[in-house]
Image (tube, rainbow, N blue to C red; front, top):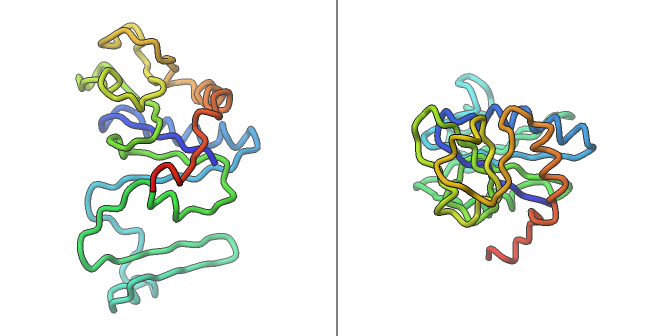
Length: 177
């Protein structure tokens, strides 16, 4: 399994790139999973549904499955700060690539998604885990870099770069325990 993070400030285009990258990888016959960091309380369930009623009744975990889908919801009694590595461990083992969105402070190799317009600083000058930069304005990068600069608007090229450099993204959970 290969794992790559995508990091960047809100509004930089991470989600859009990932949304377009997934089908580009799937066209290459690869199975893709995503780990997404959420900053606040979030819910994937709706009031009135059985699973929501079970969680509201106090179930620690609720697993709902059909012949096409499985979802696991876990309620923590106290705030829990799971690492990206703990979340990766929850995934199905038969996946080729795991795309991690967020977790910009993690020790995973990442592609920084950077745009000049929001006016946010780039992370690559200080983050040794950034393997490449995806941008729509390469001429406006704040510092010169020897890292690959990828076209943010060409997800097929980003997918090809990932595949060509897949050996760099092999995930060994033993390295992180």
